[in-house]
Image (tube, rainbow, N blue to C red; front, top):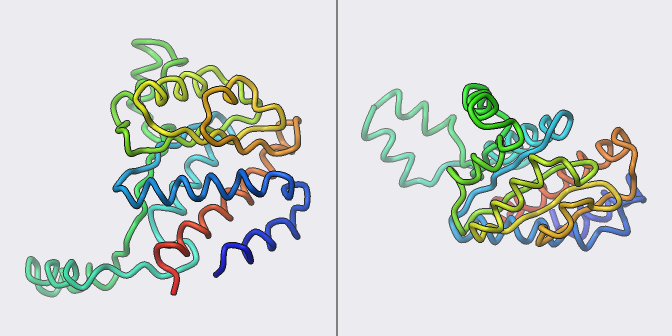
Length: 213
């Protein structure tokens, strides 16, 4: 589906997002460039934003709205390695767009919180996972969550690109974001209600770029 159609659909359903349409598009383009150069996404947030990080990871790592069949060469290799089971894998598995939710590893996050400080829970993972070709997607309704801000600072130090997804002001994250997608709300619940549809639109755009007809 054409990205303009996707944006028109988003803005028709959520007209308050019309004013940040360009920022949403910039975020989608940055993600496409990341994947084109062989990078991955690191995604973080707290509370509801942590759930959004998990949600976004899920939409990227398997099909969202389009089929993502494996390459013929990989299907052949699976079958060569394991016959009938390889054939099942070749039929059922699909391409994923690499993404890691930094909220998802309970043993690691609890170890960082216990041994260091919970404030560093995302920054430490950026140190471990981050490479220059990667993008950090940092989600915070206020833009001021210290552990998310620290992840942004660390990502910039490693020359990662940063997409900040926030509420109206952008908070402290604004100065560390290469692209800031700041929805025009300040109340936490209202901000979160706008984050999900824009994230879905970004997923649609990225998926259509790589797997669309």
